[in-house]
Amino acid sequence: MADNTFMLEIVTPEEILYKEEVQFMVAPAVEGELGILKNHAPLVAALKIGVLRYQDPAGNEFRIAISGGFMEVVDNVARVLAETAEHGLDIDILRAKAARERAEKRLSQRDENINYSRAKLALQRSIARLKAAGEKVD
Amino acid sequence: MAGAGVREYKRRIRSVKSTQQITKAMKMVAAAKLRRAQARAESSRPYTETLTGTLARLAGVAYDVNHPLLEKREDILKVGYIVVTSDRGLCGAYNTNIIKLVTTAIAEDGRNLESGIIAVGKKGRDFFRKRGGVDAEFVSLGDKVNYADAKEIADYVINAYENEELDEVYLIYAKFYNALRQVPTITKILPLETPTEEKTEEHFVDYLYEPSAEEILMTLLPKYVASVIYHAMLEGKASEHGATMTAMGNATQNAGEIIDNLTLVMNKVRQAAITDEILDIVGGAEALNKGGK
Image (cartoon, rainbow over all chains, first blue to last red; front, side, top):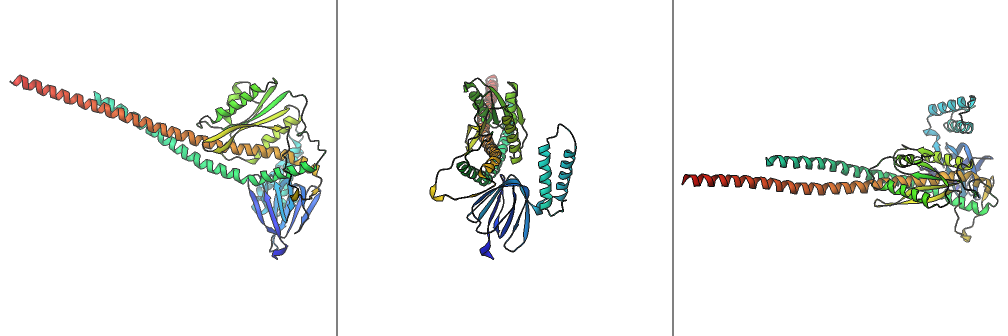
C-alpha cells in the first residue's frame, strides 16, 4: 500500500490546509480534470474553480473545494496553491446554498451596478463548495 | 494647613499609578498580539515562497508574454501609493514614520506627477484626507489580517492600473525586524517585475505546462500582486504591535519615574509640615517657660 503513494500539499495564503500521503488525486485544471498518480512527470498546471478529489492510502475518497490557482508536481510531491480551499466535510451546506441563490439572483437582474464577472465567479465558487460537500448540483 | 499638600500629592500618585496599570496591560496585550501576528506571517510563507519560485521559473521559460501588468509605460501621469498604516494610535512614531516616507517620496519624485493615495488603515487615511484626499480607503480591517482584504486591494489597484488611472504603483509599509525595530519601506509593485531565479543548472527540471507557461504566468500575476500586498499587511501588523509594545513599555517606565519623583516631593512636604509643627510646639513651650519665671 505504502509504495504507491505520493505527497499532496494544499497551500493557501493563510495556512497549509492539507499535507498527507495520498494514492490518487484529480485536480480541476483549466482544460479539464487532471488525474495524478505516483511518479508523475514534473508538471505545472493552472487550476480553475472546482473540486479537487483525492484518495488516502486506505482508499477513502475526500473532496476539497478550491477557488482556482495552480498545481506543481515534482519528485512525487503535488503542491496545490489556491487562494482559498476548504475540506468538503467542513463546508456549511446551508451557507453555500444561500450564496448560490444570492449569486443567481444577482445574475438574473439587469442592473448596471452589478459586476457580472464577479457574480459569475461567486456562483462558480458556491457550486464548487456544494459539490465538495457532496450535494447533488444540477 | 500643610496636610492638604500631602493629600494632593497622594491623589496625583494614585492617578499616575492607574495610568501605569493601563499602559502595562496594553503592553502585554500588544505582546500577545505580536506573537499571533508573527505566527500568521509564518504560516503565509509556504504560499508566498512557492508562488514566487514558480513565477521565477515560468518567467525563465515564457518568452513573449504581453501582460498589461508587466508593461512599462512611456507616459506616466499618475502614481499610486498604497499606504499601510494602523487603525489605532498609541504606537509611538509608527504611523508618523510611514507617512513621512510617503510624503518625502512624493516630494522627491521630481517628475511633478499627480499622486493617488490608497489608504490601508485609518491613520494614513486621516492624514491624507486633510491634504488632497485619498483615492480609495480600506480601513477597520481588524487585527487579523485576511487574504480576502489583500485581494480586494489588489483588485482595486490592478483595475485602476489597467484602466490607466494609475501608471505606477508603490507600496509603503513598515518592515518588521523585531519589537524595537520596524523600518518603513517603499517598493514598486506595478509595473510588475517578475522575480528572477538564481540559475542552478544541475537542478534543472523539465516541466510540462498545462495549458502553457505563458498562460499560467498570466493567471499568476494578479495573484502575485495580492500576495505581495498580503505580505506587506502582515508585516505592517507585526510592526504595529511591536511599536505599541515599545511605546507602552516606555510609558510604563515614565509613569514609574513620575511616581518616584512625586513620592519624594510628598515625603519632603510631609517632613516640612512635621518640622513646622515641632517648631511651633517648642516655641510655645519656651514662651510658657519664660512667662513662668
